[in-house]
Length: 140
Image (cartoon, rainbow, N blue to C red; front, side):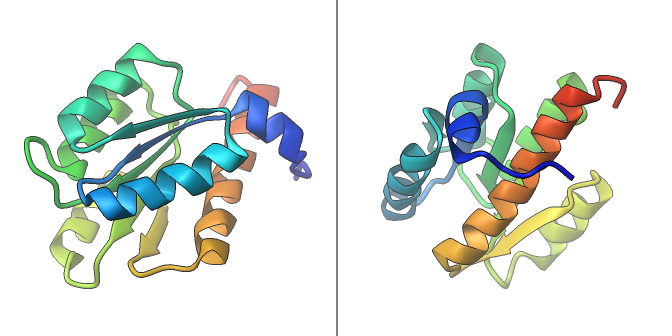
């Protein structure tokens, strides 16, 4: 497994974060921007899907319960066009029926709210390693 070079991550990995709670979204934007040059933020799944289609996004971090288009529907559409995209679900403890749907879609990364920066970035760096390894091995 490849070691993570923070400078490489900062330049090479693009992250989309979709969160409808403004305070949480702003906090995530601040911490993500420190680690990734290309960070895109959206308030709902529709805007998130539009940003995903417009930019070369490597990792998607998304809430589940959102207005306009929920995270599950957005993820389904993303995986239809780019099936190996690492998806990280941000979930509240009461989102269990949606988490079951997410598992059915093959999503393996979950972070339960509230979360620490350490927990958050350990999952993101694992997904980033996956992105970089898939670039090194394009047959995946």
